[in-house]
Amino acid sequence: MVDESEVSQDLVEVAVRRRAFVREPIVIGGNSFTAAQIWELLGSRLTESRQTKITQVCAGRCQSLVPVLEGIYDRGNVSAVMRSAEAFGFFRFNIVENQESRFKAANRVTQGTDKWLQVERFARAADCVESLRASGYRVLVTSLEAAVPIQEVDFKQKVAVVFGNEKDGVSRQMQDLADGAFFLPMHGFAQSFNISVAAALTFGYAYWERVRHLGQCADLSPGEQALLKATYAFRSFDNPEQLLKEILLRQG
Image 1 (cartoon, rainbow, N blue to C red):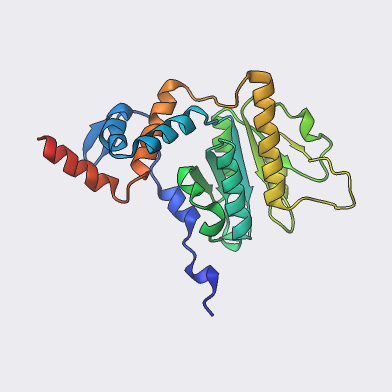
Image 2: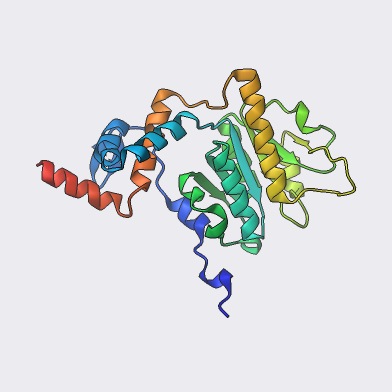
């Protein structure tokens, strides 16, 4: 029998390498493009239903919440968290991964949703927190020892939520670096939720809190939506660089 861990594609590695367009001009193969040009050249080659879906998804995307996974061992849990984050519209995704916690995400769990995430990977908790703070995020960890329930977290603001590994939770270093901690109230005999369940509950709560207070969860400007549409059009093809080259050659 073949060990699944040996044949599963390392989806996190692939996701980290995928191009994400965050500013213009977009340079591909020595040529400069605007987001609108990428959409016109590549998006027009997608079906109308696919174009509509991408446009709708980008209009609903939110970058005010960033999930952070620290030292997760179980690839199924990581993949499930990715899938839940994407489903609620949260597309930025951070992973703090040391050698002991390297994993291969299971495609059967993500069902391809990792393709639509903007994944950044860090070797140290400090580097991750520094990057998030530089972008204006408040960093909160999930902890059973936290004094603040999730109801007291202000999800109208930019928040990064850190989930720790299955055995020990969030590391002491990450807890010390964070701006605060919260817990998900439980009313049974169980002591904790599975990490994928805790993440899904957190994302759902954050989504509906933003809708309730702001009228919507989405927060991308028209320009940011255009860049994301260009990114998704680019990722919709197996070899987009070559396709763009061929299109430009045909256009003279």
